[in-house]
Length: 343
Ligand SMILES: Cc1ncc(C[n+]2csc(CCOP(=O)(O)OP(=O)(O)O)c2C)c(N)n1
Image (cartoon, rainbow, N blue to C red; front, side):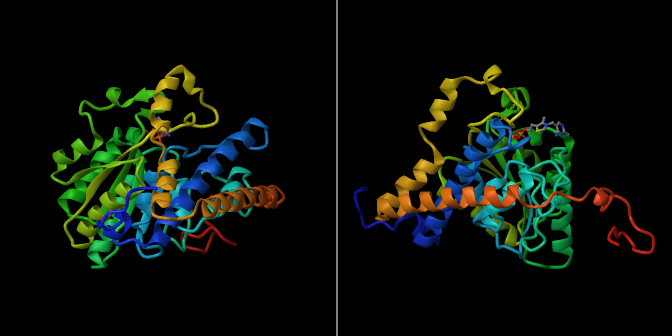
């Protein structure tokens, strides 16, 4: 138990309720437990390929909590399980994608996993080619500005995605035109096996913002409330018409890049232990306990999530596969339907 002072709780000072703080913790825990279970499913031969977000929970949940669902626009990247969950996707949706089922909400089982998509939540589906989301996000922000709407575009990438030209072209364009777009960069120190020191000559991704005359904020990716605070600051600025920001979230990916990667060849166990000692999910739990949330309530939440995951696996595994005759759906336009591919 933390010592109580007259100071407001941190979440209250940020304009959040205790239910928000609990919701953030639940989304982080679900992200973590999904990641662990998906890696097991892969090793058991029941999931062909997975990419999980263990260690990125606070980065994703804290930033996504700022998004107004269905109003703002979101252009995430493949690591953003936590963003998709906050914006309404379910555990079952994740497994439908992993098992490439016809009812997978992202692509009907056609894309590689984690290319999140939701028309209701304005999540724009992405490409496997990293950084392609950034110019598209800037384009959406330009449309918002032309239409004089008060929406913000939240686009996401890893540290590695700030190396391709797409990132720089998008940030430059957004900065010149003061577009309402936030570049949330989840810096986990590696782009697969390439360390950040081999990708940029400055210590922080946020330092790159100076070259474009925009703010570069750094958030502690082990602290969900700090990520929320920094992203909110950038979003408020964008809504006031003051333009884009880069929000760099310092975090660490606990699992290999994907289930096909062997990270023991380029990262040490000691570095992992260092980050696990300040684990974002554990910190979220400790925060709730310090605010008086009873331990049994948190234990019940964990049990309920575990049951939800097992139910989701059963339902998703028995869902129908895509039909072979639909293979070319959404690939070629059909005659007489401008831009359309549906019969
Ligand atoms: C244009 C392009 N180049 C290379 C790749 C292969 N690739 C896939 S993910 C990745 C690393 C990305 O790392 P980062 O942006 O730091 O994100 P993280 O996976 O660490 O979260 C690379 C090089 C790709 N998909 N697209």
